[in-house]
Amino acid sequence: MSRSVAIIGSGPSGCYLAQALLKAAPDLRVDLVDRLPVPYGLVRYGVAADHQGTKGVIRQFERLFERQGACFVGNVAVGKDVSLDDLREAYDAVVLAAGLSGDRSLGIPGEELQGVCRAGRLTRALYEHPDAEPLPTLGDRIVIMGNGNVAVDILRLLAKSPDELAGSDLGPGPSAWLAGSGIEEIDIVGRSPAAEAKFDAVMIKELAKLEGVTINVVDAGTSDDPEGARKIAVLEALHGHAAGPRRITFRFGLTPVELVGEGGRVREARFRDAGGRTIALPCNAFITAIGFETEGLLPRGELIGSAADREAGVLAPGLYATGWFRRGPRGTIPDNRADAQLLAARVLADLEAMGTALERPGRAAFPQWAAAVCYDGWKRIDAAETASTPEDRCRVKIVSRETMLELALQREEANR
Image (cartoon, rainbow, N blue to C red):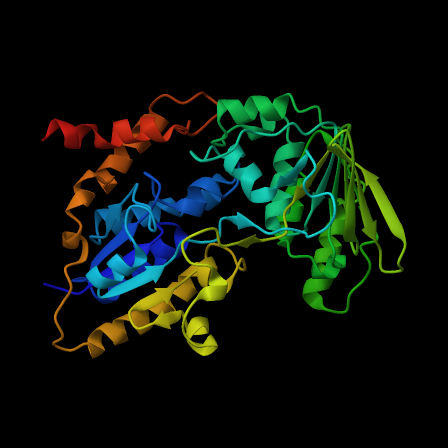
């Protein structure tokens, strides 16, 4: 028998960690436990539908299950179907790699108004997460609060024409919703100066390819910092792009202070600039893209262990964290690889230090997991989604959890 490791979450951080562990110790038993019947988390339900190049990382994660021997345990929710304590009792090491699924709040008056949408909830609906809420009604004038990559992703998708979404995996429902949105104007607003914006410059350059928009940048400013100057330069290059009637305006250095409604729906967003002046932007929808926090499982503020241990990913003996769950919503998908390699070295060192201590049973402690979705079950879902796609789409996701489970478990049922 070999040592066993349970990784809670099969998104990029969990997959990169499993890769690193199994590369260094091929005899480990590594199980990736996910509450969804499908793996890959953020790659499937967080990466923009029109960024298929980024989603290509799935191909290397497939090797994790097909060649390295990792096990996918899908449709098992920690805290509902199994407790964290039970996992820690059954496995030699448990790693929290569940990401951050909750949207941060601005904490200003008016956030309860209709038309106020949070980025995580909106993108889950756009990317057809099985637990998503219905897509909202936006109206013709939108304000996006935030200047990170998620905000720019939302901006780009809202601004694209139906033809510009060719090759994506955006489903028929979201595609029809975007095509019928009637959006005329989008303001994208950041608290910080342009030089300190959180977006990657390449994301801004991509906007220059949009065919149906006119783009203006207000008060980009200047910067002596090379990285800040580069961001300002790409914004200035974008300023004046005029290829269509839908208007996009970038604004910086504005702090949100209040959302004002009429008839229960947001009608105006009010900000304060660096000089203390009030800036009012009319809107029918206000989308917040200001970061994420934990939702369930184990709030990050309650994680056990010293601050130094938590920074290293060690929460308690045999309990670890990686990815956004450990460090907060910072960094891109590839950043998780370095994080995972460091944590893998620590986990392996701790396992080695156990010496001859009794090895734990791992998933053998949970016979009920025979009804969980395995990797072969996911591949049946995958095959169904890619079997007969429209000419302009690379995949049509199955939205219903029930339908996914019927596909995933059909062979297991037949073999009983």
